[in-house]
Image 1: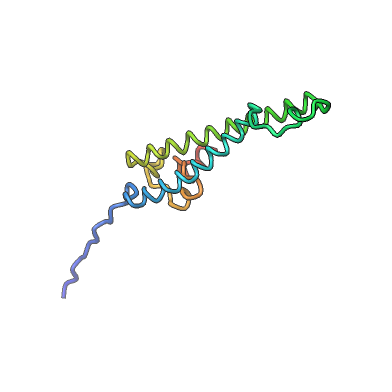
Image 2: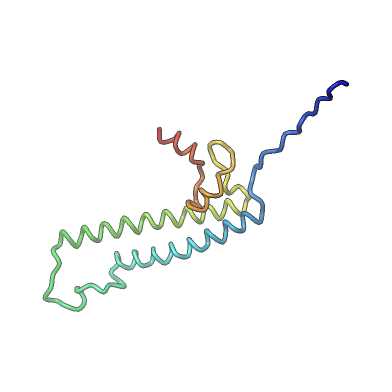
Length: 135
């Protein structure tokens, strides 16, 4: 009896996330975006002193040392700039969801694992590509 050779048809590798999966990621991103925008407004308000609970407006006799005040303002300004960049990254991720390219590594072209996207929803690189980039 002759053996018949069975060949397995290769399973096509998934090239993008399904519309349902994209909607799950969109909900996660919108939640993070809302929180990030609120945080940005707080930081921006601190820099502008528009929402300050500082002693500056209640106690004219107390003066913070100028160096300490400016360092604090610089730190808050840096945090606000970083938060703004995060907001832009989340908004860019929403655009990638719209055009169905979300979750695809821009270096390898392969899907970024869901676990990574849940932790870093604005990621555009797989862990491997990011590690190669940092070498």
